[in-house]
Image: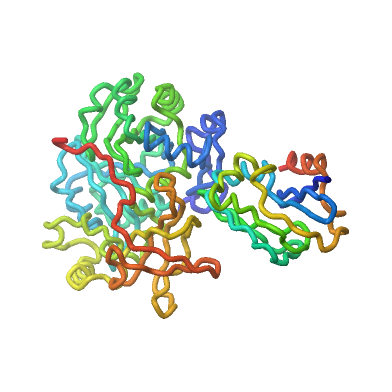
Length: 373
Length: 123
C-alpha cells in the first residue's frame, strides 16, 4: 500500500493556486483539493452546454503501458479490443475482477508505441497495484504523475482550442495526437465525459498554469468545477465509478455491453468472461437505467426503488436536478423486468415517495463530432 | 419589527407575536443554486430545533430547522414556482414561512445582526 492511500490529508494538484485565485470553492475529492464550483454549478453547467468549460481533471491517473506483448497482456485484464486499436485511436474500457465485476472504467489510447490509459482518481492506486500484480514482467507500467490533465468541453471548445493548437479541429471523436499548445508539447484527444464535443489535454504539470490561463483567455471559455462535471455527465447518461459502477456490477448489468466488442465476446479470455457470456445470453438480474422523476425535488444516490408491493427492489446510484431539462433525473439499478423504457417505478427517499419513469439515456443528446460528419 | 439570527443560518423577523423565517444570504451562497423548497403548511406545529422545511440545491439537500416554536400561519407558496428566490432575495421575497410564536422567551437566546456577522466571520 502506498503512502498516498494511508495519508487522509487531501493533496494539492498543480492548479491548486490557480483555482483559488479564481475563487474556486475547494473541497476534498478523491484525495485532492478540487474546485467544486466557481460562479455556480447551474451557470457553469449551462455555459459548458452552450460555449466551452475548462475542467481540471489532474486527479485522474495517467498511465503508460509498454513492452512486448502489451496488447495480449492488457486484453487479459480488459474486455476491450486492444489489438484492433490503431495509432491515435482510443476506446472506453473496463478493468474487471475474476467474477466480471468492474474495478474501474477507463480510456485506452494507442500512442506511437505504447498504450496510454486514463483511470479514475479515486481508484488509480488500486488500479496500478492490480496491473502490477497481473501484468507480465516484460510489460512496463509507468504512472505519469508529472502530467496534468485538462478537459475543454462544449460546442465552442473546437473554436477556442484550434486557435491555440491548429490541427486539433481535424481530430474526430475518440481520436488523439501530439500537438504544440502555447509552446508546450501536449497529447490531445477529442473526447470527454460531458456528452459535448471537446478535448482532453495531457501536459506537463509545470506548464499547467500557463496553459490553463491561455485557454481561459479565449472568449468562449470559463473554468468549470466538479459540481457541473457531475451534472453534465449525469445528463449525458455516463456512469460514475464508485457510484453507478463498482465491483458488484458487471458490464452487462451496467448496460456497458458496447465495451465488449464481437471478437472479445466470441473469444473470451478476459476476467469473468464466462459469467458475462451467461448474463449476455440470459439477461442480467438487474440493470442500470435512466429515470425521469416527477415534480421538482431531486432524488439522489441511496434512494430506494420500490416494486408495486412496496418492497425494495433497487437503488438510485446517481441523481440530481438537470440544469438543461429543469427537472430531476437519476440513474438506478432496477430488476430486469422493470428496466424497459416507459415503465413507471416508485422511489423512496427520507420516507417520502416519488414517481419516476424509466427512460432511454442520454437524457440530453450527445454532441460528438464523428468521422464523416 | 426585530430581526434575529441563528447559528444554523436562519433569520427571524418578529412583529408582535408573528415571526417570518428564512435562510441568510450566507446560507444561500453556501448552498448554491436552489432548485427545490418544501415549506410547512399552515397549521403545522413546529418545535424549536425541529425540522420545518427542506431546501435542495443542485449539489445537496438540507433541512431547515425551526428557530423558535409555534404554529405555521403561512408557507411561502412563491418558492414552489420559483425556488431561485432563495438565491436572489434570501432575506426578502425568498422567506420560507410565517409562524405564531408559542413562547416569546425563546427569542432571548438568538443572535442580533452584529452577533451573526461576527459568527459568520469566524467560519
